[in-house]
Amino acid sequence: MNFAEPWLLLLALLAAPLVLARWRRPAPVIAVPFALGLAGVPANWRVHARRLLPVLRVLAILLLVVGLARPRLGEAEALVPAEGVDIALAVDVSSSMSSSAFSQGFSRLDSVKDVIRDFVASRDNDRVGLVVFQREALPLVPLTLDHEALDAIIADLGSDLLPNGTGIGVGIANALSMLEESSASSRIVILLTDGRHNVDSISPEEAAEIAAALRIRVYTIGVVEGEERPSGFSTTTIDAERLTAIAEHTGARYFEASTPEDLAQVYDEIATLETSRVGGESFARHSELGLWLVAAGALLLLGEVGLGRTWLRRTPA
Image (cartoon, rainbow, N blue to C red; front, side, top):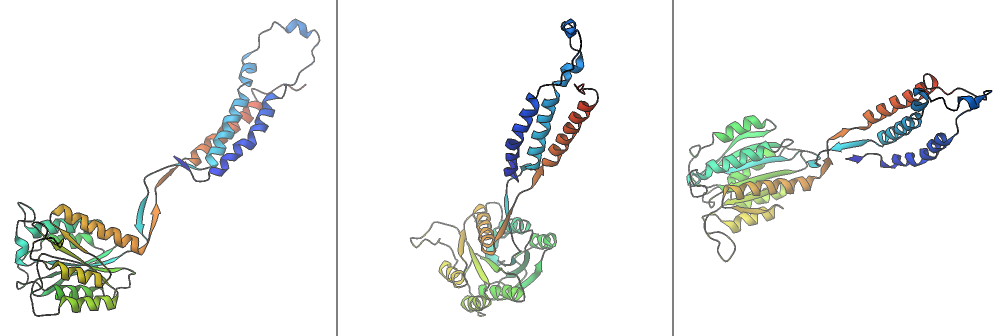
């Protein structure tokens, strides 16, 4: 629990002397002839109950002060982007993505689809589009906030959509076309491949130059397997050095993933990088308790005043 206005708790210190003075003030005395004869008469219930009035006043003041300080119970804070990011996913669906070496029992493409679907579901404020590529590229979904529709299309992806091959450059170029007219402050391409560029079309370097000119970052992901070479890159068919150069030229990063778990972490890291880049706002949901405490304090104060002027009224001297 915390207080939205903790400084108001100081009012309790200011009110304390007034309450104590009220408590210590002697009760009025009525001069009655032959009062000594009444000394043995027991006090009735009103006399005893009257002693509770100062207690009610103290409780009322404490409740009012604490309520005005706005105590609240809050959930954990979260960071949300100040505005959405426009994301174009460029996914290699060539025949090599049918290999089951990436995830036993499932093809690379099936595992990749599961990770991408989870990533899309987590991007509530972002428009996401989809481009698939082999020898050629095919824009399947324009930038959209309809993530359910996008999810359904990702789930149905296969390796028989286009002529076989790996056209990394044309995949990037089509993703850039999707983002070119976007006015979002952050525009990114996330390209995933398990192979090398091997077609006579726009080269990855040419596509990277266009991306840099458009100020669109191109994150590249290599799906790898096997042990690492001394250079730090895995023994796979991907061109890690080329993918690294593409990413760095556009102000982004290159990642490698050898398991579905690695791949999920890569997409999470990209999301974190982009959230910190565009800025965000920290927020927490709070349950405000102040209103209830103020209401309770007001009722107690009214009760104390009402009882003091009626049933528990002191007889004036």
